[in-house]
Amino acid sequence: MKKIKVLSTFGTRPEAIKMAPVVKKLRENENVIDKICVTAQHREMLDQVLNVFNIKPDYDLNIFKPGQTLAEITTRALNGLEKVIKEFKPDVLLVHGDTSTTFAGALAGFYNNIKVGHVEAGLRSGNLYSPYPEEANRKLAGVITNYHFAPTEKSRLNLLNEGYEDSRIFITGNTQIDALFEVVDDEYVFENELLNSIDYKNKKIITMTAHRKENLGKPMENIFNAIKDVVLKNEDVEVIFPIHLNPKVRNIANPILKDLDRVHIIEPLDYLPFANLQARSYLIVTDSGGIQEEAPSLGKPILVARRETERPEGIEAGTAKLLGVERDNIFREIDTLVNNEEEYNKMSNAVNPYGDGKASERIVEILIKEESVKKKEEI
Ligand code: UD1
Ligand code: UDP
Picture 1: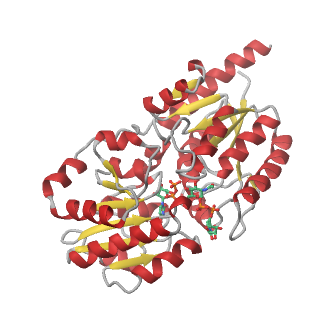
Picture 2: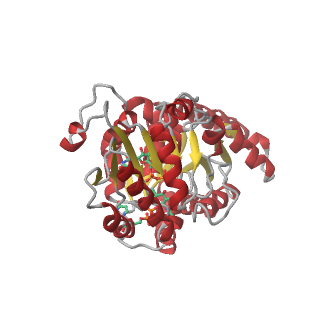
C-alpha cells in the first residue's frame, strides 16, 4: 500500500492538546508519513503543551507577536503554511477546531489543492459573534473541508443541516477526552507548592478560567465580581484562577480579585497539573471551550460564563449550565451549587457526552481507508 502523507497544523494551547493524541496515532501508523507544522499563534502556552506531550514540530512558523490582531495571525499563518505545503506536498492537511490558525490552515490547504481534514468539525453556537471569531472560523474552515471529523451526532446534524454531504462527515468523539484519560492520576503531586497545600477535602475549590474575546470588558468584570461575591459569602470556598497570558484579561482581573485571601491568581498551568487540578476541584467556572468537554469526564459540574455555547451536549446531559454574563445570575448559580447538595450531585453524576477516548484512533483509520481508496482510483 502506498503511504499517505499527512500534515497536522495547529497553533494554540487547546489545538495542541486535542491534536496531541491524533499526532501520536499518525506517528505510530506504518501507512502514514506525517509531519507537524505549528504556526505558534501562541508561544509559551503552545510550548507548554508540546513539552508535556513530547511533540517536536517539523516546522515552526513562530508567528506569535504580543497584541497580535486577527488579520496578522491569519496572514502570517497563511503565508508560512503555503511554503510548508509546497515543500512537504501532503495528501491531507489536518486542522483542528475554530482558531485563526484553523481557518488559515484550511485556506492554505484549499488554495494549494490539498485535501483538508477538519478535526472537531460542526460545532455551532448559532451566533457568528459568540464565540467571536471562533464561530466564523469553524464555519469558514468547514466550507473548504473534505473530511469533517464531527465529535458528536449533534455536530454531524449541524453539518447536514448546512448541506454538507453525509459521506464526508464522520462521527469520531472528541480527541480532548483521549488526551485527558492519559494524564489524570489520584497520586499526582503538583510542582506548585500552593496547589499542594490546598485542602481539597474540606474546602470547596472552584477552578476558574476566562479568556473569550467577546467577554473582555464588562462581561468579564461581571464574572470576576460574581466570584468575589461568592467568596465573600462562603467561607469554605477557595478559588484557583490560572490566568491567561492576555494582558487584557489580567488588567480586568487584578483590581477585582488580587486582594482576596481565598482567590489565588496563578500563571497558566501545564496541562498535567491543570487536568489534575480540575479532577480535585469542587466545580469549574469558565468561558473556555475545551474545558466544557473535560470537566464532565471528570464528574465535575461546569458553569459556563457565556451567553451562548457551541457545546450544548453538556447542558442537555446535565453536566454543564450556561450562566450568561450578568453578575447577579452568575453569583446565584455558583452559590446554589456551593450550598445545595442535591443540585450538586445531580450535575456531578451526569454522564459525559463527548467521547470514549478513541477519537484519534478513528480519525486515523478513516483517513487511511478513504485515502487508500482514492489512491487505488488514481492508479
Ligand atoms: C486564541 C483563540 C481562541 C482560543 C484561545 C485559547 C483565535 C482567534 N482565538 O485566543 O479561539 O480559545 O486562543 O487560549 O484564534 N499571549 C501570550 N503568550 C501566549 C499566548 C497568548 O503572551 O503564549 C497573549 C498575547 O498578549 C496575545 C494575547 O495573549 O496577544 C491573545 O492571544 P491570541 O492568540 O491572539 O488570542 P487568544 O485570546 O489566546
Ligand atoms: N488548560 C491548561 N492550563 C491552564 C488552563 C487550561 O492546560 O492553565 C487546558 C485545559 O485543560 C483545556 C485547554 O487548556 O484542555 C483549554 O484551552 P483554552 O481554555 O485556552 O481554550 P479554548 O478551549 O477555550 O479554545
